[in-house]
Image 1 (cartoon, rainbow, N blue to C red):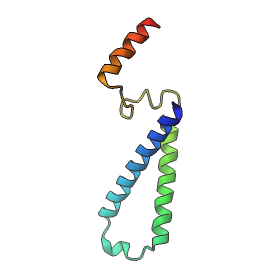
Image 2 (image 1 turned 135 degrees about the horizontal axis):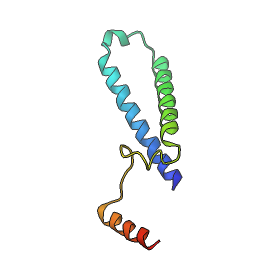
Image 3 (image 1 turned 30 degrees about the vertical axis):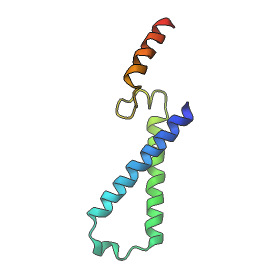
Image 4 (image 1 turned 120 degrees about the horizontal axis):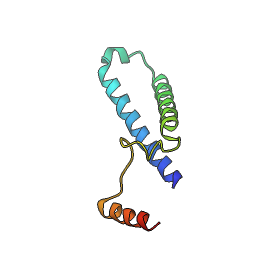
Length: 91
């Protein structure tokens, strides 16, 4: 269960970082990007992804970090939520 949550978190963090990187690249003028090599760009992207992944794990990897955060928690569908409430009441 924790591995699935970690994988979902990692995929979400990766998507958010890629989106942020794309928006940052759009904000830069193309003339400023002419002096950056592919190697430098790749290295910068790798560093940004590493830092983002570490920050996400630090924030969400603690007790109730994922399930206790309504911004990132994915709730059960309605019919399963009703079933879970019934099962909790039964113990």
